[in-house]
Amino acid sequence: MPNRLIRGYFKVPLSTRILVGFAIGIATGILLWHMSHTRGDIWLKGVLDWFMPFGNILLDMLKMIVIPIVFFSLVTGSASLSLKKFGSLGGMVIVWFTTTSLIAAVLGTGIAFIISPGKGTDRESFSKLAHSLIPQAQEIGLGMSETKNQLIAFISNLFKNPFEALSTGNFLSIIVFALLFGLATRVLLDTLKNKEEHSVVAGMLKLFQAAQAISFKIVDWVMEYFPFGIFALTTVNFGLYGSELFGPYMKIAAGVVLGVLMMIFVIYPALIFFITYENPFKVMYKMQKAILTAFVTRSSAVALPVSMQACEEELGISNELAGFSLPLGSTINMDGVCIHLPVFAILAANLFHIHLGPGQILLLIVSVVVASIGTGGVPSGSLMLMFIILQSIGLNYTQTSVIVALAMGINPLIDMFETASNVAGDNVCTYIVAHSQGMIKQRNSRRFF
Image (cartoon, rainbow, N blue to C red; front, side, top):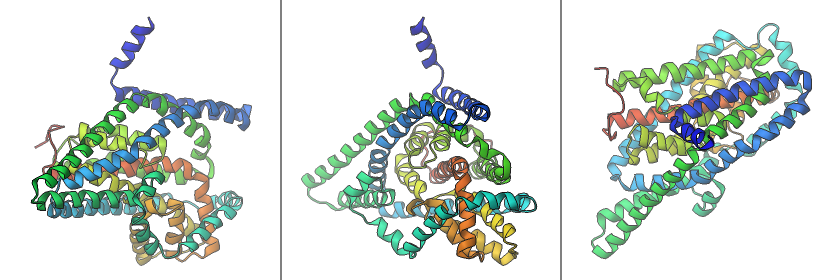
């Protein structure tokens, strides 16, 4: 009987098992949060402590494999392209990343004006919530002042010791070194006259390609644990943060969630349809594992192995593009951040009676897009970037600290949704570029025309 159950379990498609685990996790988390009203927060923490280790196992397995996947994929991908082709692809990828970020910023700003958080009775509730977190918010602001020249800090972070970067998981440094390593390999393969030296370099590239294939096989094994890890992480997330779906935060949460859902179910499918003429929902369905992984882990980097597997194996995108575009996107493409930053900017304007004219709104949108590019390389991520955005609309340091304090209270919840949008955007942009450049190995969905 147990053997029959196990065989039956593995006959169910992995994507179905993951979705079921996710759905049960949501239900379990909300149920535990509801039960904590009568049994107390200590009881809830004790119960969730039993679930957390199973979720941490999934996180640790993904963290284990993400650096090898990124490094080997970037080296083999960049080494497989000519410098001219690499430059052309890189330009297209960055243009598409910027385009989706701009759309997200406009959408987030529009939603923020519609829901108008911080008006009326919301003001007193938000003031109480912010008071206890202001000291922590000011610490983030101090960290911001310590790295005031963000451009120099960003550039400096690109060129760290590669071995230190690999051991600490510094994605920007890893990406730069791997790209330079791959491009140098390509140049040597094109210019070396000595056959023996050429064969050594070619052999090294084959070794890296084999290492990449081995890394993806490990990802296949890790994926089998996904339903259990996803269930545990979802239970913990909704058990801990379920309360933030209600009360004063409800408008903000609803606005960010609405924006993310519109990006995933309306904007991205529309881009796929009008540019590729493919069935967008079939294409998006093949990205679901990566999007769900991003949602429950709240990390674009941790979801990267799953994204690369989906793009290369499910969507048929060539490694030359996916190996470059996805790691870069996990660092600089932050559509979810572009949705939620305008919501807090409008909250600030309402709380402090700041009138935003057309010029300031345009400045807000541009600032959000430009600032979001640095999210992956800036400590404290979007919370630190909030200091830049809010000061651009005229808030002083104290006022900005109040809004950042409010953001800290709801950040764990909205972080799940915005990370899902970030990863979905990475995958969609990569697919669009692959389609336009003929870098899809096979047809994955029926064309409409």
